Image (tube, rainbow, N blue to C red; front, side, top):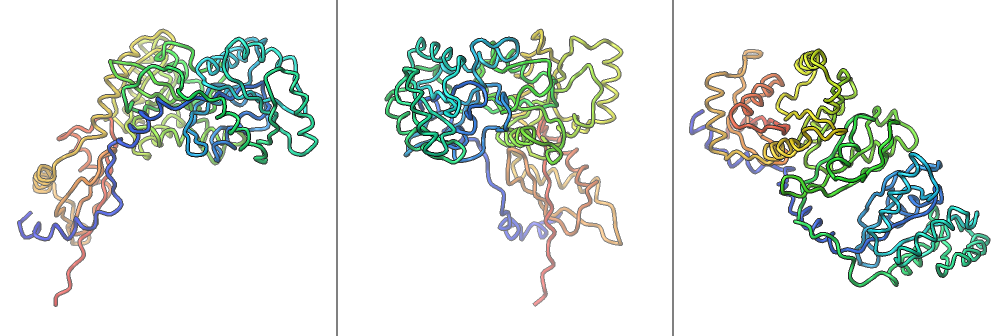
Length: 472
C-alpha cells in the first residue's frame, strides 16, 4: 500500500457514522447512585396483581405477567421514580407463610425482600377481602417493624372502593383503593408510600462503583440459578428440578476475586421467541434484554448431555448481540472419561467460537466455580481491546502483501486502510477498492485474533468501498 493510497484517508474517516464509543461510565454512575436510593418491596399472596401494579408504577411492561398464580418466583428489583425522586421497586412471588416445598422457597424470597426494604407495599385483592393467608402475612409484617402501605387492588369502580374499606380490619392503616389494570389510584398510592419513606435509606453494604455486568444464560434446567446461588453464597434465586423455574431476570451483586460483579440470572431460552406463548414469551424477551444490558454472557451448557441446536442458537444470540462470551460446562461432576472425549469432538465439529474462554464447573458442589473470575476478566479484556490505527494498518499491510484477496471477475479488491472506531465489542472498518468476500473477512478476523488476542469477544468487520472519483 503506497503513500498515495493513504493520501486521502481523512476523506474516509469522515464517514465513520453510527459508531459510538462505549466505556461503561454511564452505567457506573447509575450503580453508584443506586446505592443511596430507598427500597420499596411489593408483597402479597399469589395472583393479587403485584406484578401488574409494578408495571403500572414503572410505566412499562417490565415484570412478566400472566393470568395465572405463581408466575413471579424470585425477588426482582427495578429502578423507578416518582415526582423526581428515585427508588428501587422490588417485585416478589406470591407470599404464603404456610406454603410447603417449592412455594415455600418462593415465599422465603418475599420475606427476604421485606427485610431489605425501607417500606413495604402490601397488595390485596379488594374483591376477595382479607384471607387467612393475608392475616398470616400481616403478623410477619408487624414483627418486621417496617412501614406498611396497604394497596387494595382490583378496585376498578366505586363498588371496589367500598370493598376496600373492609380491609381496615387488618390494622395496618387506611387501605388505598387502586386498579393496577387501569391505573386508578396509583398516584395517590405512591404519594402515601413516599409519606412514610425514611429520609435516609437503611444502611446497606457500600458498593465499589460500576460492577461489571454478567448475564447467566442457557436453556432451561441447565443450572443457571444454582450457579448464582453458589456464587452469592445464599439461596438468592428459587431452584427446582422442574425446568423453567426462573421467569424474570434476577440481579445480584457478588464479591468474587476481590471485585464486585453484577450477575443477572435469566429465564431459560426454551425456543425461538416468536414460537413461545404466554409468560414464556415475555420471559424470553426479558432474557434478550438482559443479554443486551450485560457486558459478558456466561453461557451454561450441560456437560453431561450432547450439545443441542438450542445450545448453539443461544451462543449465536450472544455473539450477534456483541457481548463477551464465556462457555461454562456445568454438571462436570456427572461427566465420565467417555463423555469428555465425545464432548471435545462435539466442540470441534459444532462450536465455532474457539476464541471463547471455557470453564468446567459444578454448581451443585462448587467445583471450580472460582475459575469463572479469570474467564470473565479475559473476556472483558478482549471486549475492550483497542488497536492503535498505525499498528493496525501495519498489520493489514503485511497481511495483504502475503495473502491478497482472490481475483474475482478479473478484479482484485484491495484493503487501502483500516481503523477501529469502537470497542465493546471491537468493530473494524476497512476501506477497500472493491467488495470483500465473507470468507476473506473471516480470514482477516482469524489473523487479527492471532496477532492481537481478543479472547472472549466477538469481532465485527465492516467494509466501505472507495468510490471512484470523477475526473474533472
